[in-house]
Image 1 (cartoon, rainbow, N blue to C red):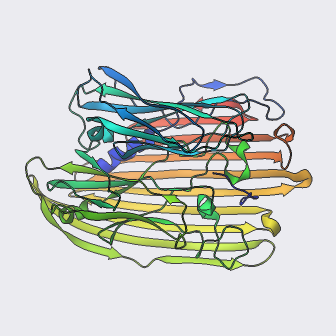
Image 2: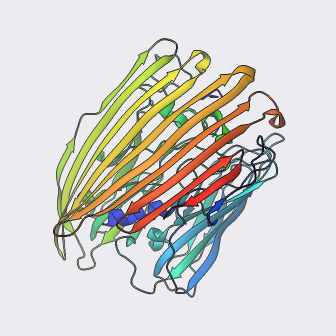
Image 3: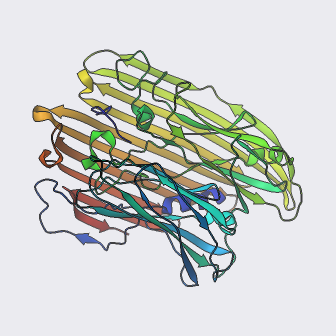
Length: 538
């Protein structure tokens, strides 16, 4: 996942959202303020990667069972393959299943993208930190309780972190993945544990059980592979003089369709990997938001449930709007989470509304010194339907409104190279008397320059925010607010051996999650790879 120039070098929804927020690189360090002075510059070793995000919430008490599902050393593009067998001693219903990846690598290596699937169901998409010469270790934890249906049966396991090891890039990525099962001491929450988990086949078709009453799709969408789609937010129209061109510019939209009909739209998160923005010194300790645990985009497809319940295969396809025709660079593995009506063999209903607004997408290039590209884009989709269940008619209406504004400035030879961008993804889901509104906002504000003495400097701020409100007639609204903000400033000398870069850098992250269920607030700061602050406020 390398950039070769300065940027070219250089209810249930709330329950699932809570599960998503809990996935994070594990870190249980106590609150601390470091008094030892940091080094004058980066050396051959630094603090192991960590994040301010909260650890996975685990149930109190009860029996636990732990098993290893993968252990491998990745030095090429050969996947690890094994077999998963459900644990004994913890029953077949679990209050939680927690995945933990532990990794280590040393030497010289780029960041790499990886995945783990069990029974063909993607349960983790991740990327790796870049190592120090002396070596680092890191870990990632994720709640995967929602895949319990898959985990109740023996399954094939596949894991791959594609890597290149040679005389220059020496880092072998060594990982072990375990699952911890917490036996249920009470009936599992049906809102967070679907009855079935399916994946479309190679022809993008799937056949759902005929008594399906609720459907969510999750898509692990990543732009990657070392090409321009890894930096899709920096691409420009073909006519503009910049190294990464992409037809109409940087607007991207992840779409899901059912039998060729648009069923959901979403804004992809502008993930920055640990070599991003031409400056690995930004990320050696604190990764950018979501870099180690790539959250899936979740779509509510319940309005299409009745159409899918006819017992025949249907096409469920994912595409990324904005990518030039024939150009690769996006992966979109898809899982379908299904809830079934135990009281009926067949659930009927209808799709009653489908309104798609016009796609607005304007990228205007202004030549000069610097060049400037102003992009404004957006899209709107509303779908509605109902299902007739054993507990009555249940209507569902889903509205999603996307927005994108950005200003990209670059100079001669793309020095400097700067972007200020905001992406919004507003979603409203009404199921019967309950409405869940989620406003997601992603921000990026950064600049890379190469100055005197070939000193490359990157200053960057990233934001991942979400406000969620659940309103039910006659009840007090439930709210949550997420604000995950990363800032970094790092400088090094380019074009010289690693020990002559004289790199310096600071980074910080503050992760805040407030709501009806309490609060979590943690801040991290680093200087030259040393953690100088680890503070908790809640």
